[in-house]
Image (tube, rainbow, N blue to C red; front, side, top):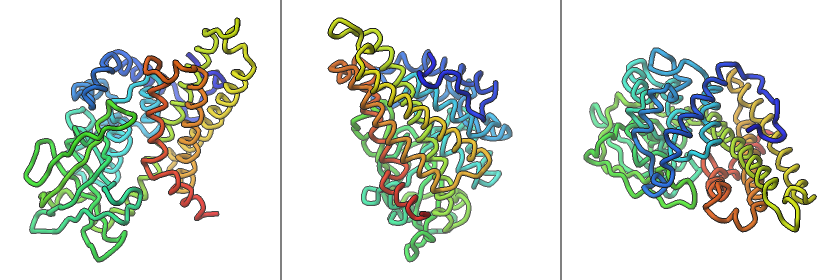
Length: 387
């Protein structure tokens, strides 16, 4: 079903191969994962077999070079896959982090040995990836992290804790932001890759966090108590972690933006369809002028957002997406998502507040978009710095 207001719109980066990918992804999410949605929400995490199935179909690591087991594409392919996941309403698999973020760090900063060791497993679904920046007392302030990694021979000894870690419950590989030099601020931060497929001495997974939305996606606390990580697992150079994160955060924020616009499109589709079927006061809800005005606003906001997003994707594919523009995208698109979903829910009336209708789940899932990836308040600060 085409999104009202976007009929016939084709992004400038779009190629026929993207249509084939979209169909493959849509069928996978709709037929393989979505039928298990209620069970996945109850258990609070996705099934590993769904990661494996996605890997079999070539849906993981779409932008990873083929020599390391990936699809050999670019971010546009990741964007198409993530768009289709949101469009069908599948929220268990943490692919935005697994493929949209983790593989990018390894491709950009990993040695050939590290790439050959980890990327094929991430692309096949045998390994699940996570990235752990946020700490209980740190939030969006990455320079304030306290998790330490002290060099001891051929290892780093890691001590500290992380929270709000997407995929944390199932993760086999965790890219950890740590302080390797506590006397320094940003210059003392490094990234190390922790292999945690099994419970190891010094490593413990905390509880899966009970969230108001995204119930089927595992978000966990991670604890490290003199946990040994081989020094060979250092990603890039010691002390280069903050710079690496700053380089990769624009893509992370673009990933969030893809989800935001896709959710806006789906909300408008659902609301228009409902308004044309539901009757009130002797005519369809859509026949009431206020409903049409609200939907016109939502469709316009969605189209403008889609065009801005596609411009950012085009810039990113050329390696030209700067930090302030990525911050603008994250800010504008997630604010728009929450606004559009809220307005569309209102059209459903009381039914919109019941879990019987997808719009209710979309409302609960949307709120965190303004928080993770750097809060929207931080996005405004990043934008203001260049004014």
